[in-house]
Length: 234
Image (cartoon, rainbow, N blue to C red; front, side, top):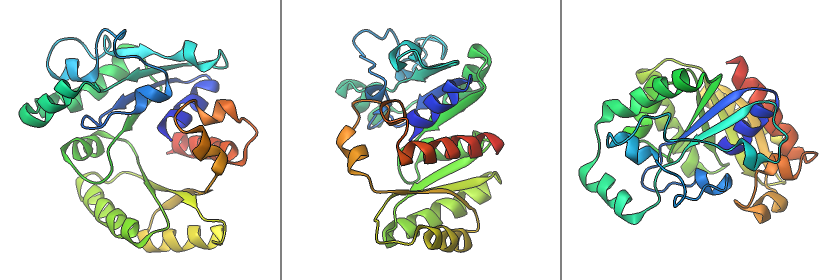
């Protein structure tokens, strides 16, 4: 979701940054074809004081088929097992996580910074929420997800009163999408940017490419464009 929204914003001329704060299970790099063996620095290196955040930002625009008017920069978390274990055992100075957001926006003159987080609540997510201008929560039409979402929203509202938007993903075709949107907006008292259908095309692509680039005329791509537009308005 983050990769697609970033790409769509860059297609319209935006300078967009992504930071992968999922330090225990990084994944954003896969979508953009980033190979850690040829990337000089990762987000872990910044958190450990080995580089600036700008040095850890890879310009992935050339990977995106030359269809962009703007640029996309990705700060990837390290997927090396030794680095993940070090993060789990030793941690890092939490203030550097928050600092990285402001430093990256200023260093690269970004229009938008998207922070990709792990599911649920942890230290990285709480810091990210406190530093953000808006929050997007993804969920499924599942009771367990509803309960978890309610907890996240309650914490977020106490931590930082920012606009909150929901995205419902992989919705079964038997559901009335308009009804799902209306019910969730009433239940959680926030807007629903989109109710995305389950798509075998989307699932089959996996993480091999950016869906919006591979399938520019697909229904989900149209929905993703609307999501990107709504987020900018926030």
